[in-house]
Image (cartoon, rainbow, N blue to C red; front, side, top):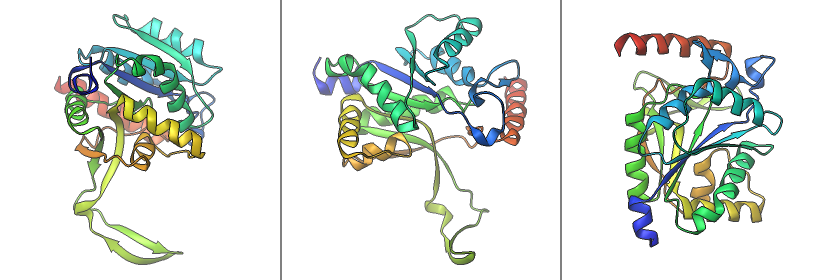
Length: 247
C-alpha cells in the first residue's frame, strides 16, 4: 500500500490519553477513573470509539503506575472486540503522545496505519458523528481537530496586567478540543523533530503545525467538554442524562 492509498483508505488507530492526574479536581485518584453515572469517566469515549467501524484499534496511555488499573476497568466494563492495548505514558501530555507514537512506530513505518486519532480521556461526551467528520477532513488534508466556536454573545478580551486592552472578534475564535487526527507518518515525523529540538507541545496539533503542516478546524459540539473541576463532572453527568433521555 503506497502512502497516498494508505492516507485515503488505511487503518485508523485511536489513542486515548488517560495519564493526567487532574490536580484541579481535588480528588484522591486520577480524574479519568472517577465514577460518572456508574462507570469510570474515561470509558465513555473509549466505548464510543470502540463501537465505530472506522476505528481499527485503540491504544490507551495510562500513568506508569496505573496501567493495570486502567486495563482492569476496561475489562470490567467493555466487551472488547477489536485490538485494544494499554501502555505507560510519559511525564507530560506531549510525552504520553510520543510514547503512543513510538509504540505504533513499526506499523506506521510499514504503512499499516493511515491515521492516528488522539483524544483526551477527560472528555467523555464524544459524538461518533463528529469523529466521522473529523476523520474525513484529516484524510483529505493531513490534519484536523474538533473545536467549538466562541459564541457571538460571549466577550473575549486581551488584557495588559489587570486592564482590558482590546476586544477580540468572536467570529474568528474557536475552542480547540479533542479528538485531533493526523496522517500517521507526518505526525510521527513531527514528533521525532520535536523530540530532537526539545519541544513539548500543549496539544497534538502544536507539534504538527510546528513541522509546517496546516491543521483544519472541524466544528464540534460545545457539549464535548473537558472534565477539569468538580463542577465539570456534575455538568457532564447532567448532559449524559439529557442525552440518554433523547436517545
